[in-house]
Every structure is written in C-alpha cells, then in structure tokens.
Amino acid sequence: MVALFIVTGILALSAVGMYNALVGKKNQVRNVFGAVDTLLKKRYDLIPNLVGAVQSYMKHEREILTEVTRLRAEALGGDLTDDEKLHLDQKIS
Image (cartoon, rainbow, N blue to C red; front, side, top):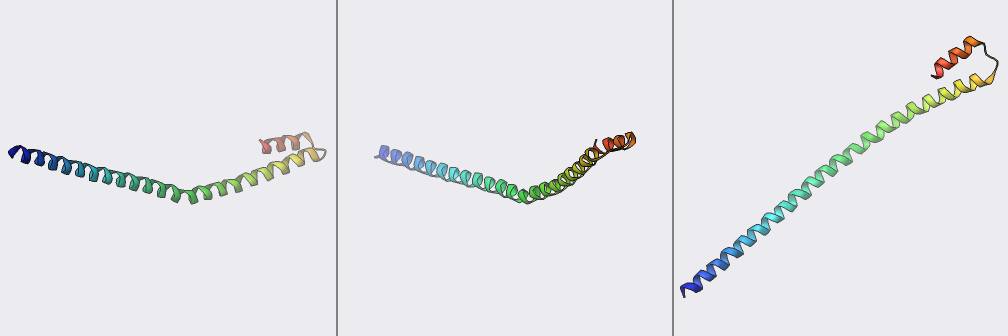
C-alpha cells in the first residue's frame, strides 16, 4: 500500500515537472517570436529611410551625369584652344 502511494507520488511529481517544462518551453518560444517581430519591425521602419537616401543619391548622380555629358559634348563639339581644352579637362576630372 505504501509502495502504491510512493509510485503515485513519483508519477504525480514527474507529471507536474513535465507540465512546468512544457510551459517554460512555450514561454521561450513566445519570447523568441516577440524578439523576431521586434527586429522585423525595426527593419521595416528603416526601409523608408533607405528609399529616401537612394532617391537623393539618384538626384546627385543624375546631376553629375548631365554635367559630364555636357562637358564631353562641349569638348568634342568644336575647335578649342589649348587653354580651353585644359580647363574642360580639369572640370571633367
């Protein structure tokens, strides 16, 4: 009879231990998903900043390309003196 109580007690303690372990694992999974959600939100919040930076860089590149194209056309366009050629080369560089 005492052995039956001991076995029942051991089974009950192991069941409680397993339940607590499962609850702990479930909480760990929730914490990890929460951390992933936080990191993804930070990443998504940075996308508009990246788009803005790229747009201003595109504007800068467009201006430089337009200026270089204009200078190249001017250099190839006509008869220039040596001083004018040197000045254009310095601008292009």
